[in-house]
Amino acid sequence: MINMKLGSPTLIKKEILVSAKDLPLYCPPKDKTFWAMHPRIYLEFDETKKVACPYCGTKYKIST
Image (cartoon, rainbow, N blue to C red; front, side):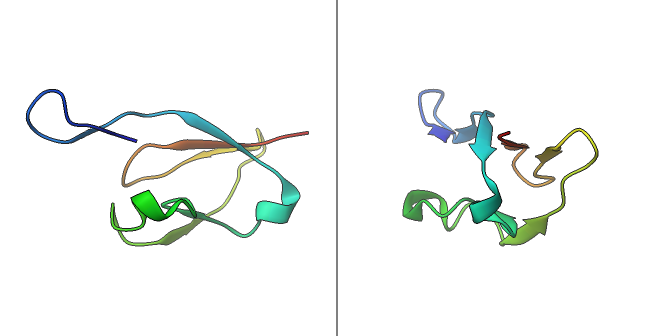
């Protein structure tokens, strides 16, 4: 999500729950409003089932 209130765009970091059907996971998310935020990169989850995008900081978590 992008915040335009301060005059320049800043990213609002949030945690997005994903399921196994969303794998392989990539960022930016499938939402077409975010497709041009940064290059698409594929993310790997760690043992805590969480991962953060190195470009925008969006956090993802696998729902159980």
